[in-house]
Length: 402
Image 1 (cartoon, rainbow, N blue to C red):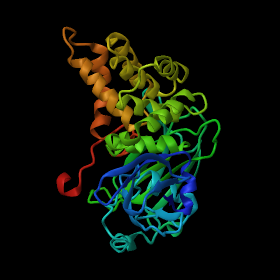
Image 2: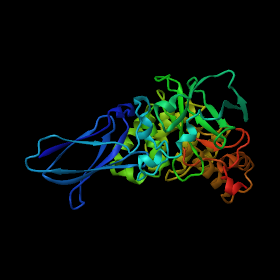
Image 3: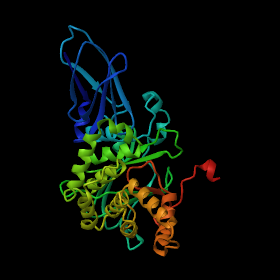
Image 4: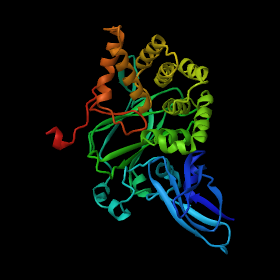
């Protein structure tokens, strides 16, 4: 037997305990291995002589592959290094290329093609930045009372990055950043607060969008937990089925994040959303209920609780209604998964029979609908377009908006 020592680039150490599905196929394309692989530690696989295809699906949606020929006399181990098509020369920025697709680029495009059109960004990105908090249904500009830094020089560290925003917020304090008045459509992006164990500033990095999307900007927000970032990106990319290859490992990771809610409630919410989408929430009622009750500042806890109640064999519709209304009352959820669940849940409640004209549900749905209509559903954290947080409006390309 020969050992394949599968690993990623040297900067993958910044990805924490995030895991990805690893598969190995023989020359007949029969799968000989399907296993979880931790990004920062790699994987050792024993194989017999032969030809193999090694492939890994990143949370970003990029499929990394390598062909390996193993002969009888091949020295062991055989090193197999897998790297994203795009990567950052800076260790501190490498996580984005493993855990998300910061430029939304198509994997088959060449690096040379990516460099085209970047000349216009040789100067600092012209965009205004303001910070907001939502208090009692009102958006309050807190830019003058919050500490934040703008790093334009990041474009010299990573040619795909345009601007870095560092916000020094407190745990349990949800801040929203408004970006507008410049080279891209105005938008508002949720900035999850730091965890108690990781009080570092919240980082949002603006990248040039290289896809065919008419929006030229992509905003990537770094979560304190790489594992939570990985799980949510898989969901945002619609890759839950692919992740099911190593389902138990993902589920165990999601369960651990949910269990450790007092250490990092943001990561716990990510775990809760993943378990909901995987329909694996049986046995976690108390954990989910506590996430709702112990973190009243976080809309996602109430939303996850409501969705969980509706997934039961005997759904508690009235309690779910109460929790959806509470989630909307707390404000917009941190994650796009929560915005979708809240909008779908309230919409379903408004249509139920024999109950009709539910005044509270209808009012909540009226308040939420403009944000859902203006949302960027590709984003991991809740993001919506608009010239002001209180005035959401769908983004229309110039050709459509003319």
